[in-house]
Length: 255
Image 1 (cartoon, rainbow, N blue to C red):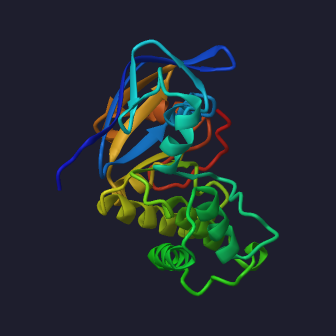
Image 2 (image 1 turned 135 degrees about the horizontal axis):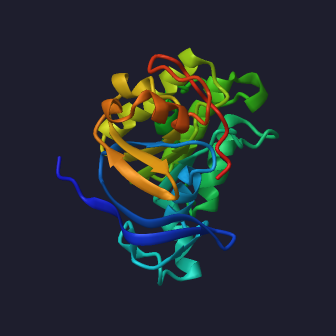
């Protein structure tokens, strides 16, 4: 499979409300990659993800996402960029007053779909892809946490995105269900969609290998494997929670 460069950052500074969160970010992301963002709460993982779809301020350097120059992109072009990026949050953010089908239909209508048959076919396809083809008429409250998150992933897939950004997607799930969700995201990456995931859970790296990006001291650094992180640094990554490679650790990451 030919790989294309989807994200290119060179010497980029990222801000949250005029506060410098990450400095001199250098990152290149290709199609079909599975990438872990590792760091303690407040280290900038979410800020980096938000920068890819123009939710936070960036300055300096080169910042290109899906052939868009983020320094010069116009406001009316941002929605088109965002349609090419699927976003999976820790909190499910489903519309609680409508069925699974209506949740997904709403997104398609909001992003310009008009053909009813095409919408029905796309909804059926993404639900089948996430193993939820029988959930069409169910309401969110009738679904478990893991099932709701599968619907969120289905929603992220509706517009056939080139990139999926997952921000602590298993934070509210038990370990077994979380593992199933990561397996799903991993398989999606194998089909060619890049997945970039912020997480505290180091145990998945053995089962689902990918690139490792470490966040520390307002900077990011790529590491080759968990062997490059000693026990002391593991504690830093987990924000002082006890971490063993086989132990699940999940906290909120607010920034």
